[in-house]
Image (cartoon, rainbow, N blue to C red; front, side, top):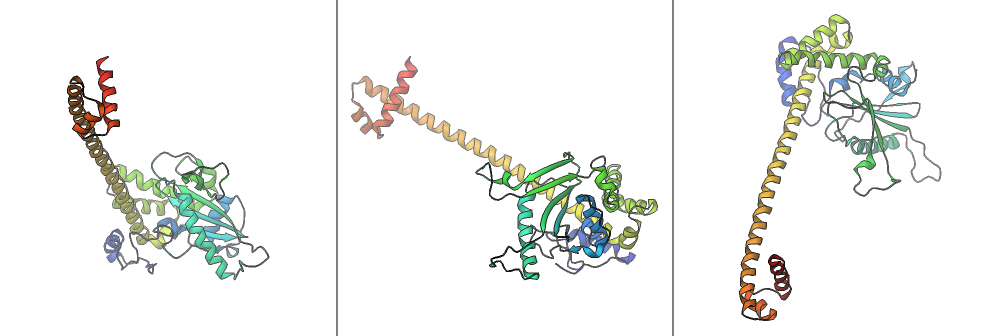
Length: 333
């Protein structure tokens, strides 16, 4: 992962916005591997502890007891996991999503495998020991705040992806998805002011964008308004330019992915239509050839010729000739 730079110079704010959009090397941000606003907001121990307490329904107070273990690699299918922490031998992996993704259990399996590999190496666990090597208990959570309707809470299972279903899968992984949009899971957000503030910021941006503002204008107005209202004030004041750039980049990337999905769907429809035409043409061609063969067979049957002779003269198998004779007889009924 490239080095992240704080964007503090107002004269370079527009350049930084463009860099984030284009995934330039100056910012260390790449279209397929990036940090997001949520990742930055919860990168500190204090904020991570607040999120942990909210999700796990605990009341720990010492951030120093917590270990941030988010992997610094692109192994999580193109981006970092938003938040990965260990506290008292519980490992909580949290991902923020604006698009519903039923493949989260499979993505999480890949991520947690690498997380455990890192943990085993750092703690020098001996996997060949005759004693069980203790590892943190994992919990997997997705916080969904997309614009499409989703239930307040649902469990996504790895076994749902198995082609061959089994009643008791030997490998299962469950991800709990919480919808954290306004009016959903309000208690969870109340217990984590940072999460509540972030969702309010997202909602403000959506609201202003819908009024006709450009997305950049909506983002800037939302940041300023959050600062005025005391919503994540310290975070926004300290990281204002970077947050604006990140938010615009995330929106551009989401739009890019949405357009790609629509293009793939369109291509699928066109391919299906073309395949349908091809199948129809082939079927019509076969029917035409069969009708010609049946006309020939009728004439030869009328002359009293035997099936082996007819098959030889029309250059078809006897089985095919018998099949067509049956069709002729059915048509005559």
